[in-house]
Length: 166
Image 1: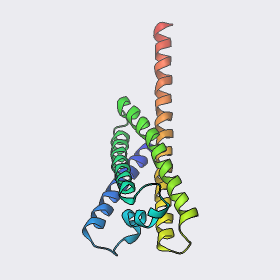
Image 2 (image 1 turned 90 degrees about the vertical axis):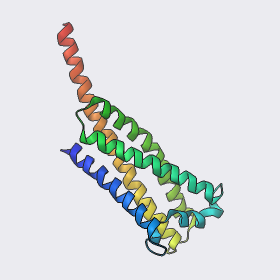
Image 3 (image 1 turned 135 degrees about the vertical axis):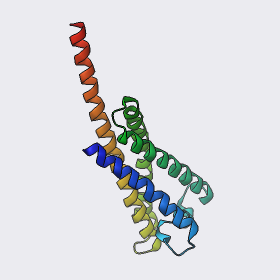
Image 4 (image 1 turned 45 degrees about the vertical axis):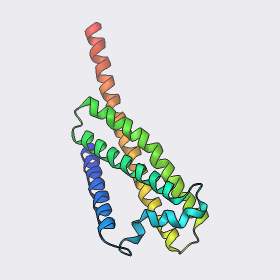
């Protein structure tokens, strides 16, 4: 049951992200300004170690990576009977856990040290921190479910091997 719920959550997250990306790129500003990360990166530019175009490229790479991980996890959770897909899901969740963890730290830093409270910048930082933390928790939960199921499978395989050899 929890696996099916996770699969639908991942599918919903993927569709929502693609829909928001579509809206942000087709409807001009100020519509959905809070989700426009390039605006946020431009405002944070004086506090970043690199120029904002470089930060934008890093953001785009992380976004594409996370969309890929979301698709992989969704597919593997829908076809959870496949041991190979379980392994792929566990590995992608593990790697994504660290990537999204770094993103959470970045937005936490932005919220606490860069933007004064009540500004658009701090509102965007809080929004992105919340989204990143949700994705971080979702990854952690997926990894735990994957490992729990893989642990049960390994235990069953050991029992079968012991019965066969014993």
